Figure 1 (spheres, rainbow, N blue to C red):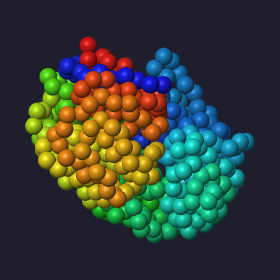
Figure 2 (tube, protein in one colour):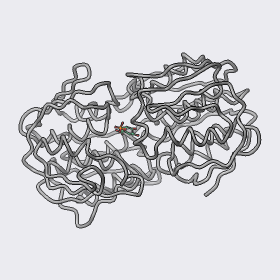
Figure 3 (spheres, rainbow, N blue to C red):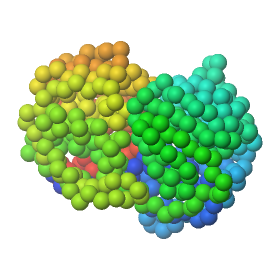
Figure 4 (cartoon, protein in one colour):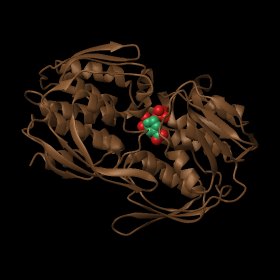
Length: 431
Ligand code: S3P
């Protein structure tokens, strides 16, 4: 589908971002391993977390969906209750589903095969195959154990101490989940801290998990994990598109309600502050063990270019596409580096943003591990491609709001991976 975006006069109003994608995946997977009934409210009904839900069902977990607000009841049978799936598990576009499930399935004595769509089948899996094999799993992939589909026959794992070459919450989570089934302690060390939703949720279920800087140690539980009730907070990464939209479109003021403000996710706000953005956080509280709050965002005329690197990168990894759009409107040079990981996301996000923003007239240069962008620059409407990547489609749509003329996003429907209501909310804020 193609979507036409016109130059916007203002964004005004109030939105509640969709439920957090990372927490939705974890809630459905971890409650399936607990003993007893868990209730999940405000689950993200988008393609990615639905891949995780379908995966758990295929592994024999009884999952009920109740009422008009689609509350989920998971009847967890305990750590060892999963059954051999009768067919290949299709993870769709979701790297989180494939990598986290691989960790769990490495602890299971049966055979599973995991595949995904064209994009996922190109994404690197050696990063989990190597350490899960070290723990004793039989796990194989296409292209000499580097790519999906994956074949896993698990059981008899031993805890390892593993120094991760890159910061990745998916890899870290896969190892911690496998650690639940291992003999002895599993210890994972990250070069920088990545999102910590897995650690928080497992600890709340009674797992002995200790965090010391960037090192996480997990002891295999002696008892079953506790079932839980959770109401999932709003997704900061989805909110970020509107934070940028309200910052860039003149005469805007929006209220974003109930967004998760976990500091392993909000590096983008630190960068926006340095750039000179105008936002305020209100009503800070906790939900589901995570800090949450409301945000007021107003437009800003004078943004400044910044350098973004190092430990900040994993804390804003999914905000790279929208950060590029902000940088095109900032005075001076913005450099984003140490971010080669972005080439291995749903698309090569460095190449995708350079290609598409260039079509709109931006001064953007590709670096090996990031981009260099000169601003401010008046963007022009153009025919741009989503690269079938939800975050690229949404970032280009926000760019379209400030471009002269009409911007057409080709293959825009991929937003339904994480944010099915994105375009209706965007229209609502323009009324
Ligand atoms: C995610 C971790 C990140 C992120 C992805 C979701 C998660 O990936 O980019 O959108 O839920 O754990 P990496 O672990 O590959 O950095």
